[in-house]
Length: 271
Image 1 (cartoon, rainbow, N blue to C red):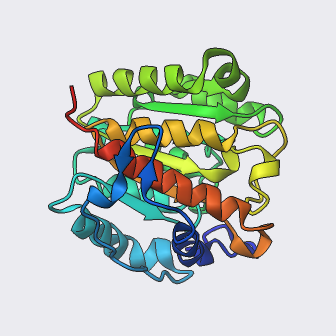
Image 2: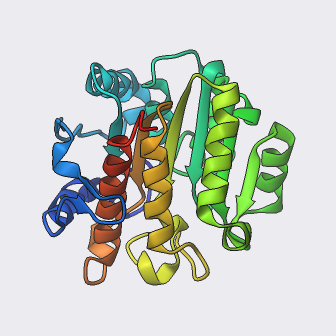
Image 3: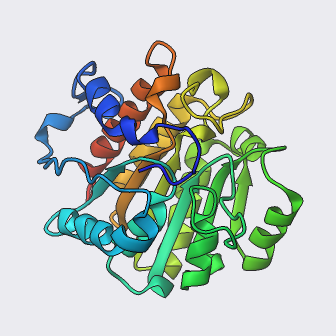
């Protein structure tokens, strides 16, 4: 999907990420896990028209719920960040029992008065009924958000860890802390992985990426931890426009995050 109203072609990302997967092996040497052991089902694309928010929302949620049925986890390949709202509804539980963990340079709290876009899924979910206290955002960058939206995050009770705080405390520490916190307050957790949280050098295909962001190895570790956590049911990977990529660096990074999540899933329940 592309709900930004711009010339972005994030709708081309699913196939590009699938192609990038073919360039990897399935063995995670760090975790000593062969992801080939995981049973995976591919559900294909869900093409969405420009009238997505008016006519296709229920169909999209239904597609996500069908993918989730009978499985331990789902990965949604966006598309842009507008898919996150449908993904959270796809969890199939009351919104007040949902937890959301975002990896993003942005708060995604833009005003709703111009409709639903890739810039306001979190604002929309607050309106829908997700408690702000059950939202954690990691990787927020300086000079990427207005003061007004930072105020919205603070007033809503959203927990925010900036990119500098990630470098200071460590990605594993912050992700583990976020997952533990959300588990105390929510029955299921949705992970929104906006690839523009990466440093611009690693994400030229993301229009929102800027110098000073996270590094791919950090998001691999984060995705692995999320995959390992039993309350994480859905993770999306969004905001990649393959037409703007350089040497496939962004698509390869996105594919590695999917593999890391899968590797984590094979450790669920391990002592």
